[in-house]
Length: 190
Image 1 (cartoon, rainbow, N blue to C red):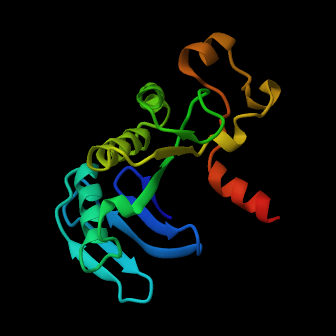
Image 2 (cartoon, rainbow, N blue to C red):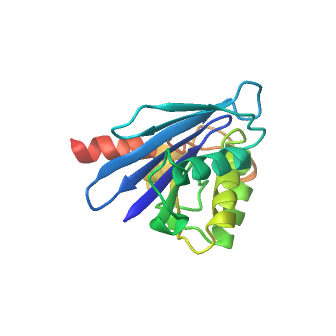
């Protein structure tokens, strides 16, 4: 089974294509400078030379389109998008709505939109990545992996700041904990 993992940042898009049976990283790359002049894609298929594609990428949708095209053409290792069994999307912020990874539904996307104000440089790009993939791969399962989920179960005394409770309710101010996917990996390895 091949899984595509996407990490859409404010001006970049990182990706990896992983074979879950062999645990091999089949291909990986990054689109840089999305929305800026001089944007490009670096693409590496394991065992081959890295390629660089210089192309204007005005939006994340353009970057995802280029990534999928590159995975499909002679530089890639996928003959058809149906070979990709699922897509995992890193989503920076889940607010208080999710404490684990979830299958992406319209309701999940709506919650992400509501939480976009908590990470305005990242969550809109994450949503764009999800929507672009859903458009070209409508029957492929998509999963949101929230960066804040690892820390979501901390007790209230650990996440509340010494601020007025009304500010917490109105502005969602609290400690959320970030880089959860990294913390989870490191704690599992330890």
